[in-house]
Image (tube, rainbow, N blue to C red):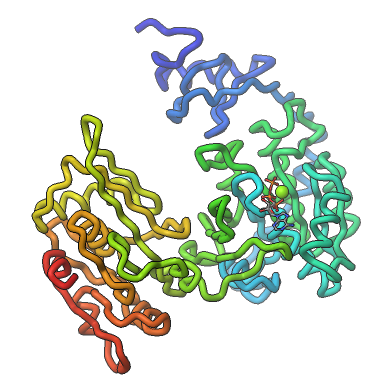
Length: 477
Ligand SMILES: Nc1ncnc2c1ncn2[C@@H]1O[C@H](COP(=O)(O)OP(=O)(O)OP(=O)(O)O)[C@@H](O)[C@H]1O
Ligand SMILES: [Mg+2]
């Protein structure tokens, strides 16, 4: 097979590996921005499968014998018995932002490295400076390093969002990693913030800030100072258009927590979610509202998601998910309209497209409605992308409601997982979801029969309608 220079179409993993040995001799290499793989020449597709991700970087000279010995001495550790290791469970720092503490698993763990990512302008710096000033208020210094903004800009934001709590907050407009490490070693702060990792560089390397090797080297340095001096470090990172972390995936493995901050630009609600957490669950979400005074915690998240729900609207029904340690109530909306191109379009926000296709197939077979010539749109209001399958039934009922022009009343909530046979599976923590629905004033809950059997002693106005299949649910509405 002929191998081409400029495209990686015929570039097999074997030839890639063989030529990797040439990397050491070359003056420059091409590094994949996704996985960190190196190649001596440019290729269109990396062996990790990503296209157009190879960027040119200078090769680092191997460290001299002296330098290697010195760094080995720096990092020398001794082996200790596990039973003698001090447990870190108690040493969490309270950020005084309940929603952030919740996502972190109960507060900031000392010595931990946390990556905070999110789209531009979503509020990463705002959230972190609020947490930093809260921690600084306790009396110990906090170091906030800004590589993107001047100290004046940060001060302006701080004046707006954390008035009167700035006493021990130290600002530093710096991008050189060595200077930052020196400053941190001198100040010995109880919390370090790096905003953002893509602007930082280490003078040891010749490549540009934001390149794979720079990001990796800076993250390594930060991890070292964090672990050695027991200081928690927050690193802000940019995301690409597709929502992936810009720069190498490799630092996601390095850090202890990866937090992602999302939200709709035109709405005030912001959702903080952990994608990786070595000290807690990743199913927890934190909710905030962007306001003049910074990010405000939303205590009654279900209330804000259901705020605009109309009574008796076609194609709209309430549902619930259990996120981390609390139930969340949401509104599902669906719309069908005759297609005017060759094949019908399926579009979903907040629901996976494969899941939607499966629900549509079950609806067609088990509920007898035909949607082949209908475009289907589904939206989970509020911008949340719930994990789990408890929203299946509500999605199906919303589509049925819009297709058949029947209204579900506002006071009805539906939960349950739909199987391929049209049966309904029980959802976890059904009892807690029902209690939250009662609190929010719902009168009718359509849920799997198995869940109803486990719930007792509710009282009040609530009517639980236990069902076994999708067809039964359709009869109810
Ligand atoms: N006076 C204000 N009142 C209300 N909201 C404001 C005000 N000033 C800024 N904001 C909000 O703060 C957001 C910017 O926040 P922040 O700078 O923390 O975002 P960021 O994620 O750090 O952005 P970047 O990626 O540029 O660093 C703006 O998009 C806006 O929504
Ligand atoms: Mg910022």
